[in-house]
Length: 323
Ligand code: AMP
Ligand code: MN
Ligand code: MN
Image 1 (tube, rainbow, N blue to C red):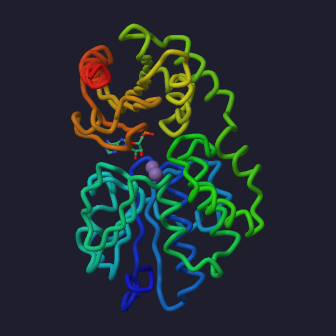
Image 2: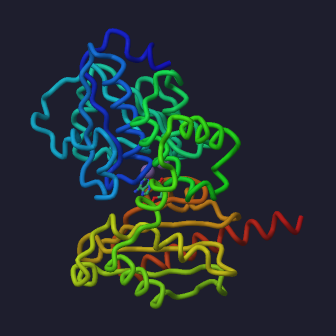
């Protein structure tokens, strides 16, 4: 599939979603480096903004372009990775729109297939796993393997979530055979937290509230608090997962303030509730068990609206179980 998509193409742009996470960075850098290493006749530009410091060890991250020099530039091909809709490409969207050809690889259930060629598999653990499937196993270098492994680790919560299926483990095994230092990648990019990150997480957990009889848990962090601790959005990764493991909880909600009374909302569910449907209802998207959206209002408005949606789904589930 990759050979076909790259046919007659010489300039390529790769972009992922706003506030890129591990899977987004891993898939973009992994595919970008693979093309650079194996197709010397093609040039690749990778567009991602503000990636976490701990991902900088990945080969290729030093070439990432954090701004678009010329919005009129026309690439032969734009590859969108791990991005559910074109708006989430954010600053690289104009390049996607102008590109001669477009290709989308993604696993968001909310992705409608916005490119010319689409490879969307909602059941896949991660976009990095899907990218692996496009590559020629023998041509994957250790550097590319590190990037894809990092992506899989992050989207599966270190192979824990139900999205990690047999194929995920097979792919991970193949990547390990490339000689990567897997424990180091897991420790240093997934588990490691700065002191400030731990303080903010502690605060978010301490201030969390239960709702819907303890089946929901929610917490939020305001902008002034983030400024006080000197943390940004990428430092808040992991808080919603920690809320989710609370006993008795089905749905966890974590919000942080983007601008005054505008919140980025993260949703996680254990098994029953499809949070992607809730996120889509509020104009966002994601997966069954991990989704997000942006909303204006006070945190309590957001929670009120959300809890109605969660309750509706739970009631429907109860009814179908009774039948
Ligand atoms: P997050 O809570 O930001 O970690 O996101 C969980 C999942 O939902 C990720 O796969 C995101 O790409 C996706 N997601 C988050 N926010 C949005 C949004 N506004 N629109 C579409 N998908 C989103
Ligand atoms: Mn992502
Ligand atoms: Mn992903």
